[in-house]
Structure formats: structure tokens, C-alpha cells
Length: 366
View 1 (cartoon, one colour):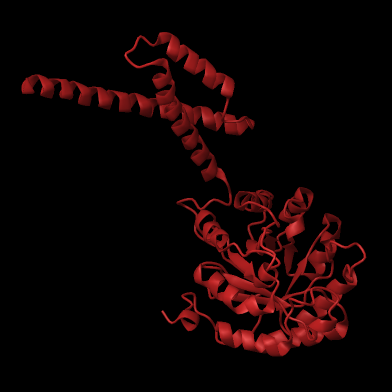
View 2 (spheres, one colour):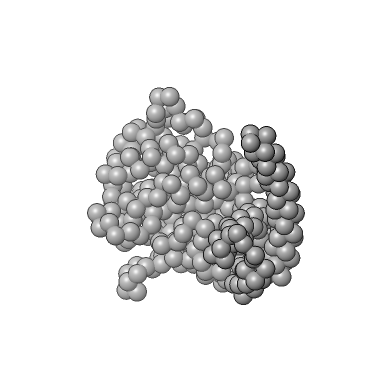
């Protein structure tokens, strides 16, 4: 009896190997079909085709498995094949961290942003309001070692009666202040028609959360060679965010920086909710640098330090924040911008008063 059982088990082992060989052969054919579907822009999932295959299988089924069992088994095979096709597609994305692609380092006037570099700090006012305001702020952040100066000249506002920015005049003021203090200038672009002015005055083109899926804008600035800082949309998934970056790379611009700025949730205590997991996933799934806007993430000055530490701990390549000489009279975001004394305290509390190493030793002591 034992001999018979061993013999039958040997037969099963042989059949297992034959089934595995056939499954592998089927998977290779499915991958080839998936590649052709990708090239033609067709969907990988065809429910009509799946139903036809299942009908053919159950019609040919002579037992001992029931039709329901046969369908269940083959649906698992179909699903595994679909996952192979999706993984194959994933590898073709320009944003994807494939085996042969190293980390992208974006260099802006000598400041390097990306994996292996010291985390950067991007600081400046929410909006450029006047020559005096932008110049004194640029002088302040430059005196503390900041090299990347942010300032909004075109402001997307929910309320159409709110301050919308100074427009091109704001760009000129920001450029002049940055040049006077040896800074690179980061400014938000809202309209592709303004690209020539931004090409002239800005060092980094910022795409705001509300324009993350403005595909006309993405295509236009993707053809520029200016570095782009791409903010995640208010309710965008990580995949949508990364695909927005894909537009930029597809158009030929390799200098893309992702920016997590918090997402809208049901929590009313903070302006947004900082999604630290998105930072880790973006670093893991893409080769692009990732920075975190701690000002918009929480919308509260008392959260700037802990949010910064959380962002750097999980691997962010830099931090973005808003600084204003007198936030109480700012024309936008009065409650979340910090004054100069608070900025000094922030630098000390986060370790940015020293040059942080890539390993963040100064902040965390490990």
C-alpha cells in the first residue's frame, strides 16, 4: 500500500511540474499580449474575453472538479497574469524606480536635492507683496544659510476677491531679491501662457496643488528645462501625483521634485493632514526627490517642528515653509506664516541651524 501511495505521489509531483511549465508558458504569452495592448493603448482587462474562456473551460470540464471550482482556479490564474502585465507596464514609466535607474539629483544654482544629499530648506513668504517685504525676507533667510527662496507672484485663491498676487511685477521683485542675496527663486506658475516670464525670472517652476492635474500646464513646463516642484493635489492619490510627474518627464524635463503638502481629510483641527506614508512610498516607488511643505500640511505654527522632524525621519529630501516679516498684516495665509524670531527658533529646534547630514544625526542623535 505504501509503495502504491509513493508511486501516485510521484505522478502528482510530475504533473505539478508539467502544470508549472504550462503556467509559465501561458504567463509569457499573456505578457506579450499585455505589451501589445500597452503599445496600442488598449485596456489589459477584457471581461468579454474572460467570460469566453471560462465558458470554454466549463464546457470542456468532465470532472471531478465542479464548474464553480474550475472557474475559481482559472480566475486566480487570470488575476496573476493581469498582475504580471501591470508590473510590466509599471517598469516602463519614466518615474519608476527600475533596477537600472539611480536616484535623480536636481541641482539648482549649486544646491543639490535628492537621496544622499543633505536635506534642503525652501523658505520665503506665501506671497510677494512689496519690494521692501520681499527684500527683507530674502535677506533674513539668506543670513541663516537658506539657498532656495520661495515667493508667490500669482496666487490661486478660493475667494475671487482675495489678493491674487502682483503677477509679473511680483516675479521681477522676487528675482531681484534673490539675486541681491545669492538665492535661487522658486515661484508658482498657474498658466502655460506665463511660461516665458517664468523662464526669465524664476529658477524653479512650482506647480501648486490645484494645478497638479492641469495637463496643458504640465505639458508646457515639461518642455522647459527649468526644475519643477510638483505639489500633490488636495485629494490626489499617490498614483495620480506620480502620473502628473510622468507628464513632465515624458515631455523631456528630468528635473522634477515631488512635494507632499498634506491632503484633505475629515479632520478639522489642521488645515490638511500630512501624509508621511506618501513620502516613503514616493521615495520607494520613484527615483525623484521628495520635499514636504510643512506650512500647508498642518496650517499651524505650533506643528512646524514636529512635522519637519517626521518628514525628515521618513526620508524627505527637504522642507518647504513660509516666512514673513509680520504675518499679522500679510495679504495671505496670516495664520500659518512665521515671523523672523519664530523662524530662528524653528531652525534651532529642527537642527537646520546646523547643516543637516543625509543621515539626520543632528536632529535624532542616531
